[in-house]
Length: 251
Ligand code: HEC
Ligand code: HEC
Image (cartoon, rainbow, N blue to C red):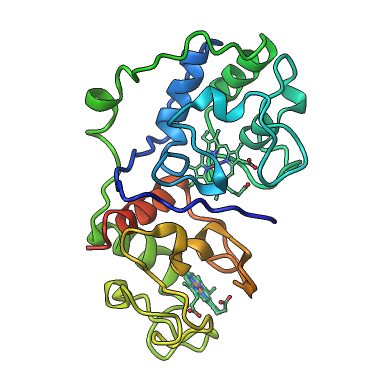
């Protein structure tokens, strides 16, 4: 899988992903509501994973725009079945994994996206000022504290293999993951040289995040298995908690 990770800018704002509220409709405003609720955690101006920024100009970023990673167009007006974006949210497997990563939108929301595309993918409803993002959607977002990430991600899904003296084939101890902040893989007893495990403020270059996202290569370095190994990927809210914690400085 070819993966283009755009570097985050200095502005560490982070939009939480809410678990996928069903959005019924077919206008671009409805589609934007879906993006704001379920996509901006990874596809914002500050952190555009997969080289996709759905925040700055969401319509201009997708309509008639070639995919960065796949042989196809993100949104073909009038033709959802030929739109990479629809395939990814509908999890057809034609163009890599499902979006949002590790989870799925509510069926109603997937239909909303298909209906908007099939009706011509008009951007008329694209407001220049996102109306309700500042007050309404942020307060109930996930918690990015270290304590939450250690308990819900590392303790729940990782320390069965990543414990001190593990025989699972890794010496990287995640029972107190905050001790790893800023360390390179080698310093932590790992296999990936000078890649930094947890780079505060930069999840998109942190080995920990890249392994959880299933990124296969960084430059010439092959990153081996996706984490957690031999197991289902983390659900989106946990992925986003980890991402948000690192983005906000891994405190
Ligand atoms: C937890 C992080 C995360 C979330 C949330 C997320 N994405 Fe992604 N997205 C990625 C990553 C990583 C990639 C690159 C890997 C790939 O193509 O599968 C990507 C790639 C994509 C691509 C392909 C871009 C291209 O040009 O090839 C599309 C389209 C996309 N995402 C749409 C969405 C939509 C729509 C949502 C919300 C419904 C969403 N994503 C939510 C992480 C995420
Ligand atoms: C079933 C066992 C298992 C589980 C569960 C597991 N890992 Fe791993 N992990 C490994 C093994 C084995 C390696 C070494 C081989 C590799 O890199 O693929 C490794 C390597 C890593 C590395 C690279 C360390 C380095 O520098 O060499 C990171 C980062 C990592 N895991 C993170 C995680 C995270 C985060 C989780 C939980 C979300 C997790 N792992 C769950 C077995 C596991």
